[in-house]
Image 1: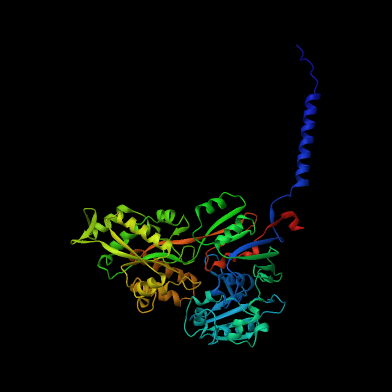
Image 2: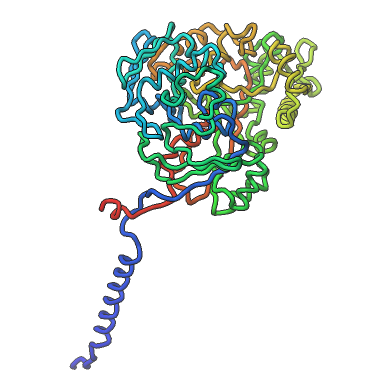
Length: 552
């Protein structure tokens, strides 16, 4: 039987229509969409709100004012800069060498460095800046004055600076991040004149942005085309000045600004608003500062390491952070800040573990009698001192509540900040004390807080911690120029600390960096200062271009 004939034109028509549709789709895609991936492009602007107002935009005086720090970090450059983890990276100096004895630092400047006014930047500018710090009448940061006081300076040529210290001090390199000043504009000014100079309101630097205009309400900065780390992608960056964080939040909500760094303590409503609005990206950032509870080792109850470890394991820090700090903090498990190059995690030593805490207290002889811990008929009772700052007070009461669940009796005593510092903390006149530690500079050096020599007089080792091996490690880390060997010393120190536990470690508070989602490549690291959020600002962008266009 023959097969009936069926016309093929419907099938052909279908194939033709499908092919034409595919061609049209490809054509439209090629004509209306960029091919390949996109890359950041130059152009556009970014507006950030800051709380406060500028006073002296000069890196030698900027430590007194956060807005001055922000502007100085954008306008000036140092010999070196800090990476996201605090590692020292090249800046004006493309490389450096340190003598084996740790005394001599030789910095080699990049060729072709320029100031914002087009004048060349060379070794004379570096020497001029350091000599300004060394002047006996210097009115800037005393930490800088002490560090550079006895440094000998040489500039054998325009691109070389030699600094020689009287004794080795490994953290010194991190302090050469201080911004360099232009000698051609400030030569001949004494310390008082430099402090009052008009330059401090119209600064000329060598950083990624130059100051174009400044008023009482804003500073307008423009990209510096000759910036030695590459011309910034943003053409313009504005800092607008507001009274406080409350005004900043209002400005963000009203789209007056495109970003702001907000201090710890943001309300739950504000957190929900920014997290629920796709316009914004929220980043939680923290500083090297951290909170702890000192335990006075002269109190018989705290002599035992078992008891000290029990106090740590009895504390639910996650609950404390969620309930008292609205989630705006991170637990710490080291006296060296998390995310630093010297940090090593000892999380197991600080985990919340009530059974272990109970076992440790029992092993130390502190047993429950009618719900109260006792030893030889004496209750485990002491006073926890804190300042009357509202947050500190709430934290202290929550700690006392949690410890009471193990039968420990804790009386909270709050006093004014000045009284707490002068009469309780510094004379070490406490059973236990809640305190926040803020390292004095950009290096993680924990010597001031935990070396035994700092446990007397004006020293900051308020826990009276004394351990010979820990002392030796801290001393060696201050003398060793090798970052890798310093890190090994600090790692061993952190292990000793976790075992001895001279203090109960709590948390590091977090700042909330709210930035418009259209701003790309914002990748801040640890906030050594709040201005460290601008570490990679030259890479931020709001414009893009197709990779194919960029190649052409």
